[in-house]
Length: 185
Image 1 (cartoon, one colour):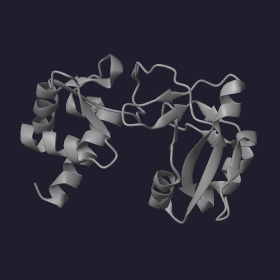
Image 2: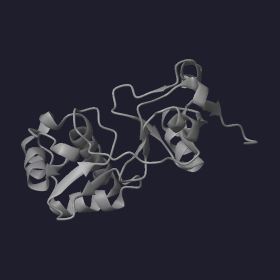
Image 3: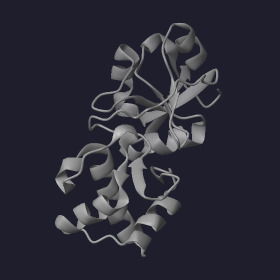
């Protein structure tokens, strides 16, 4: 499968498994799972031909590990990033002392005023490392990295989760738990 085809399939999977399963006639099961056979049939109904091999390659080669098969290989899901209503069946997890959030500099004033909000998603997404946060922030313009005092946020009663692909999730990060990373930090 060429790179253009991978991007097309990946974008389709993101839309269907995270945001609009109904567009392909699907309903997300608890945990966000969908039977692979139903996904392939739903894709075909809307004119997106995806073979089982295409699906396996996109899941395997995704740099962010956005998607996962269950142990039997008969169900697939997006690991996080849902705006569609779904019970993700995540277990609370103890975060490290600091986590990171990448964003574009144009959003910085609002974030420092209001904190990090989940917006249309189920959770705020945080990274365990600066490199990932920079990459995420760079998708929307000049990146800036915010350091999240996760240990203090947890001590204040906020619950953290960790998705199957290592993304840390929390409902909200108030501004007092954020600081802008400077080149010296």
